[in-house]
Length: 321
Ligand code: SER
Image 1 (tube, rainbow, N blue to C red):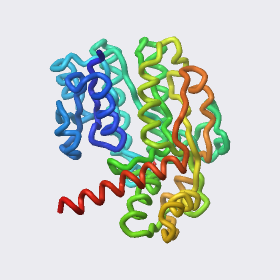
Image 2: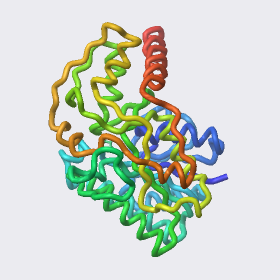
Image 3: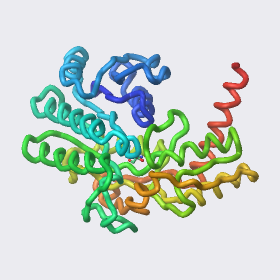
């Protein structure tokens, strides 16, 4: 059994990864950590430690205390917040990565997962079926940290033999934990507002197409990549990963199949420019060939699933209050 430390376990992806890894490897082998007690479901689900991702010693103490061999580094400042606090985004995203890569280089741990993003691409990248290897001139601070982080992952693998693996996540859509500070967050907010208000005012314009993925697929991809034999993981910067592409207008049509009087309005803000710099669709054939990646959810299947889950969630909270 691997002994896993998840840094950023209270976040949108970190929380669901924590639960899935506990199911797979046993709660006693999964140590969740974050900078605060931000997600009580995670905090109360087993072993939980306060760890600041920028504090090398705090991470090292945790590794030694629990005999950790694998780290999932899920803490990051995302694209929209990163534009408000550029230096904080740079510090958090880069310092945390260097700490974990150096701990692996110095043999305190054996395996690292670090997420990259479609934000590594920029306005000069081909936008349709964006290839694995292509022009990358990101224009957000978040995208710059992810692109440079990819280069460092590849460098640590080639130079020091570090087993680091990475995925360029598209926008991740889920219903349990809200995302924070991303440009693709609208695709989560819209489902909550559809149930609560039957109306959503979208911060991106009607036809802004972006690559997206349901959480279950993102978690499966992450675990599949980490379980793949080392020789199958041919790309050590980060793999393109894809499932579906949609626009605010097409997600609202999918919601209307369940909630016919749902209405969407559009008030694009500063996030529009970020979205416009990213691809519309991604070619992830390397992931499909190298380690057999397959997605399960398309827009309609995801919409049915999320609306069903959220109806239960909001009904339960009404009954309990
Ligand atoms: N979901 C992220 C964001 O919008 C992209 O990786 O910032």
